[in-house]
Image (tube, rainbow, N blue to C red; front, side, top):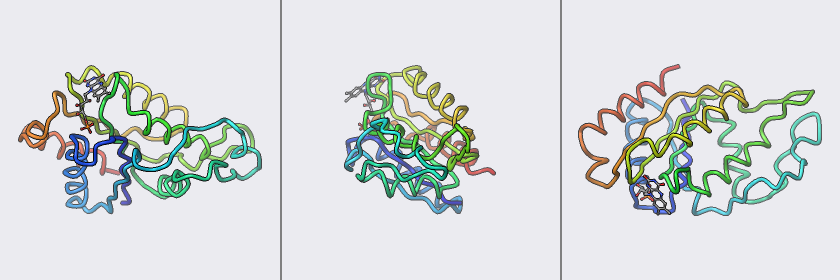
Length: 186
Ligand SMILES: Cc1cc2nc3c(=O)[nH]c(=O)nc-3n(C[C@H](O)[C@H](O)[C@H](O)COP(=O)(O)O)c2cc1C
């Protein structure tokens, strides 16, 4: 199973990175071929709604030739995609959101319909300074995203009141193991 983690945190050694490092370890232990990409440190713009990607019967490659192009291919060839983000202002980070906007280039609903995302499994892993309720809008928008683009929502994992110690606590290590077991199941 090919698993790709798109991490939107700006901090290479921050809370979200500590979480994804443990997550990658557990995914590999479960037999997955897992890799992580640090979106914030790449040149990735949001969609500019130019319409080029939807302008031919087969979808055309996104017209913005930045670092998102190889990542869109990674997304399309993954069995399971995990978005990882700290909660910033009750939402995912702007850099992760910019990348998600670019997924518009992988699906067209108008005939002839093409969907390179169909039936892919999607999960989300988050850290936040407050309690888990601050992630409500992120989870809700992901559910809407999955419904609209016909992806399969696999689950969410969150570390509230996050710091390095909290992430390593047995409670969250166990919850992460449950999350891995759930999202890697067919
Ligand atoms: C700009 C900014 C906005 C934040 N907004 C929230 C928020 O709305 N809710 C919350 O619980 N924590 C918020 N936090 C705290 C982070 O979510 C938390 O510290 C997180 O674990 C940081 O992860 P990182 O080390 O990967 O950046 C915010 C932090 C920053 C820097």
